[in-house]
Image (tube, rainbow, N blue to C red; front, top):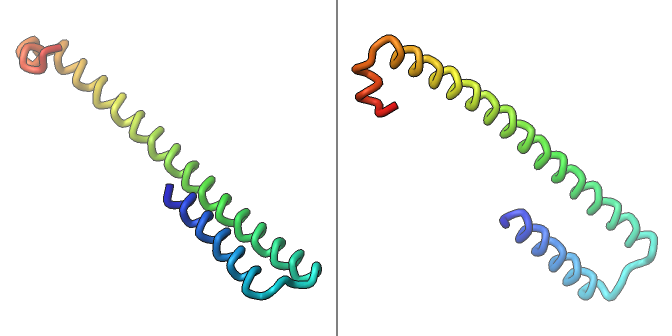
Length: 88
């Protein structure tokens, strides 16, 4: 939602600047659009990198919880009292 608000704010600022300048030459408009697109692509790359990092961390946590679950099962199989305490 924050990113969407930033993008919307950026578009509004661009529209305001365009209206204030009274229009630009087509070449300047193209250069400005190109710069905006480049900035958006860089932002998208950052978001993708964050998503990939989050996915890797979640995978690591999943493996860790799987290991813990296996160890708790082994303990509960060896010691029925622990199984009763854990409610397994």
